[in-house]
Length: 229
Ligand code: MN3
Image (cartoon, rainbow, N blue to C red; front, side, top):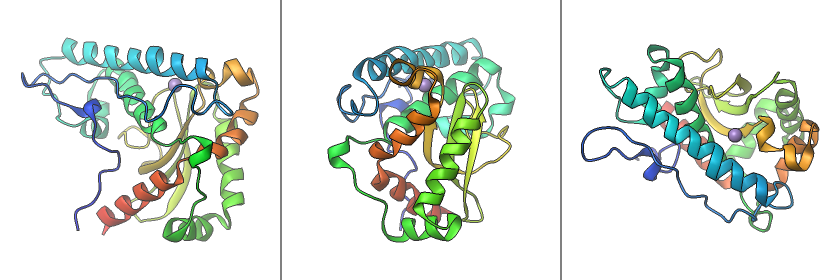
């Protein structure tokens, strides 16, 4: 059986015909107001069309400025060897990957389904219960100092773990202190929540459980489990 890609391929990962790598902003899988109960339309619009677009533009510029280096084909390959690249590539490659991953980790509330099956069993095994996992995940997100991300990852030994990264780093980077395949990742930069939640990051984190795309998370879990065999 062929392992499913961890992230659905999209124009975000395209290599141009000239062989010069240029990345593009992926479309959201829902409307800007689709998550409105938890994340307001204005935040979604600015976050996607300004912040994410900025990471894409700056990544392309940073890669062009380092054209003498051999560009890896896939973004995930770039992340795996990010220590060999300047910080502008690290920040913007991370920013592009993280946000592409973030959008597809969320779903409108009316399409929400609870975690189930083998993935739910793995959560229970690792953390005791879904509630215990959620509590630990929220705590990790709330205690990440300054800007960054909180992650559920699958490590190479198959176990699940919660970790956080500063700035736009992520657990796929060779510089990450805890590495693994991300299954779920939440943006804890203030731009992700400030309009609706102001300084109340913990409230934002608690609300986010209403819009997690658990089917997508479980499909990443199956793909990671398959490729680990
Ligand atoms: Mn962001």
